Image (tube, rainbow, N blue to C red; front, side):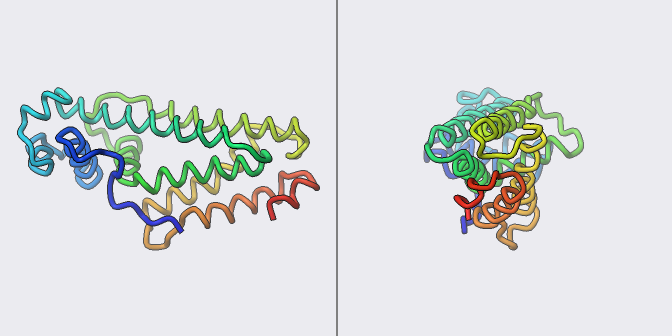
Amino acid sequence: MAARAEGPVHHENSARGRLMNAAIGLFARKGYAATTVREIVDVARVTKPVLYYHFGSKEGIYLAMMREALVEFVATMEGALKEGGTVAERTMRFLDAAVTLMLEHLDVMRVVEGIYYGPPQGAPYFDFEEIHRRFMDMLTGLVKEGMAAGEFRNGDPEDVAWAIVGPFEVVRGMSLCHPELEFGRERLARLVRVIFEGILAGSAKEQVQ
């Protein structure tokens, strides 16, 4: 079972890295609007001019955070797609990579959730839908490949992709709201296997038991 990450794990212990970690943690706990530049620099143990040098403003550090999250997400997902195996195996690894990345960056996910679904906080515009579109495009591509290979039953690829992504959304939501229940990689794999029972063709079904 993947451990719940308590904060960002990919930023180096430099002034810039500490500023990014501080901002992510504060945005996740207090919200973007309620977080001040003073609080960010105090947690990061730097001065305001250092923040202005690296990011320009609170808006700049927020946008840098989101751009880094998008780049890391796309790189992780594309890397998972390049691995070999059956389409079912690759789909399982694709979803596992996505949930692993999410569990490593729960605070970033909390920032995204708070701004996307919560009340307006005055944060600068960021196209959150781009992350969702890329994720679903990649997953739908896997489904189409599985159908073409005779590994998945024929049907509407988008409908099947939405069915497969359902378990990921369950694990994502439970990890954010109820981390003590430890919905993680193992639970995701079990739930996806349940979906596969319905969409895999006969011989392919035996390979994921």
